[in-house]
Length: 437
Image 1 (cartoon, rainbow, N blue to C red):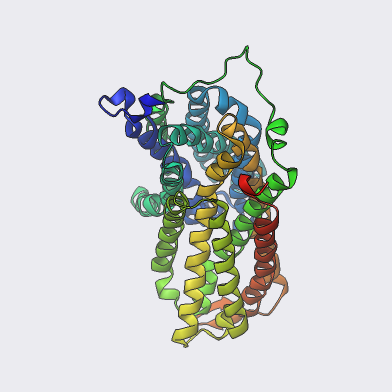
Image 2 (image 1 turned 180 degrees about the horizontal axis):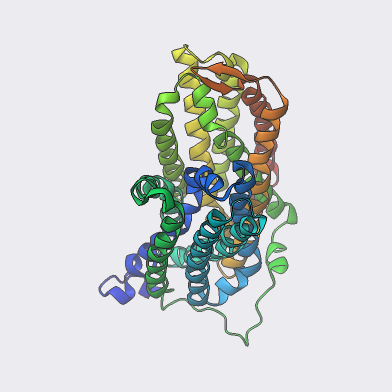
């Protein structure tokens, strides 16, 4: 691994061969989280309800996780093939989405074009998301062997920060391109992101000193790798990850409505940007902090304890229901939102390094891919769980001209605190460091 230390030439520079390509890939695919910016425009343009078009985003997250799970071995064997697949699928999916939006605008209400958007944004882009998310992670950990958390946190922070970077650009494009801007934006960005990802694909390279087993060498299966530790260890990691995403999405999906409920409708945009910064900061900061810990699982214990404590206080004080006009309670709810965002991001960035600490680097891409299936299922359950609760508990009331449901949002917290407690118990009793086994 001596070559990983050299930074004299660009061919052996860890920033050029790992960090920069990782950011190019993740800052591109992370724009999937910009969906809320243009989902209403798409719905209006093609003649469907917003709820009907929302499934495109849910499918994208689902196929992100599932493609990562099933294509993890491809990433393991050849990062150049996987990063090229990611570049092509993401760009083709985005361009296809633009095409079907255009056709849907010509024939409003035609379900075939809605399905086309599902296929392009959900399935094709989803494959690009999954392979693109995985491709640089192992390479980063190999180049930055002494600071694995910092390296993976940097890339995953790029994924989280992509929304904050791309949102104003997309909003400016929608305003500047006129009434046909929605489909034109997708076609333009498909070209831009393909160039970014393709450059990342060309630059991405594992260090020369790393020996990847050849096809003639027998490599243990993922099940065999998992069985090198007690099976409960991996079960605990998977469910911790799943619960953290589910709870994060449940609260984040209601974030704008909760802010309006607090009487801060005029500050929704600012608060949303700040929460995105906390999300990205959690990805980088918590993973870098974990590099200094003897057991990386400690980060998850901290995330769950802080989330339980803050959620419990907001429940006991009725912070969301009583926060309008009360500076203290309003501040408490906003602190909860920022903490959940940071923990949500930190949960993502620490998964690959936690897995490598427990199971080694040999099959980390494939193992990380299987673990991302938790993201797939959480993507289908987190938002929908919170929406179902808000629709079935409490009654809408008007706050500053906006209809909100404070009782519904408070009820979401009762569910998330129970889930956080379950995750903490898994972290304490299932996920053990190697020294404890």
